[in-house]
Length: 289
View (cartoon, one colour):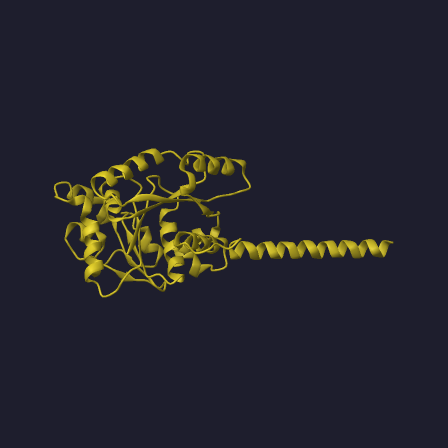
């Protein structure tokens, strides 16, 4: 079971969007995927059309010792299941203050799931809250890999030093296997000079941990959650779907295509229009002569 913590202590950078759509894209590649919401805002479950008000959630796993298998919900996305959150989780950090071993509760729950569940998940993606508290420490303690969605903006590297420090601390004290594996740049507009400057700086500081795939701005990514779907189901031919399919291939080690399918299709249409325009101009020139 490959467990990945999707982390950035800044809000609004695309953690939940990446968790959902990367998970669905990995399922398209044949992986069995479990998504776990560790954010009290509960956006992950809502994004997938899951009722986060009724029923047990990850809060019950942390506080009431409920087994993880008893809070897993199936989704409409083939091959993807989810453990939802709700606002109760916001109180968990206070309730866990005096609990011995609170930093490894999620790891223990996942190990019990892996050993005792009749089903098997190839990939577990943990959608972390925008903080570095006990819930995020639990995610790092349970994971072997860390994926950081990073917005291509002026303050892109702000907070990365603290995050890498926390990862190193968890490596030393709780989980020697966890490492910062990848950084995916989100909301990338390559037409702007600032975007190129930011990506160059991230690459200079963090090297090849910056993934080749970038996520472009796409309105379908913003629309999909309101329909309770991933962008791959809601708008399968969109740039957003193409980018996350490409990210899944890169993450899984599958050879990348030269261009994401949606982008390639648009380029082909653009070239065809250009050729047609040129043909019309040539015909007009011939008629005049």
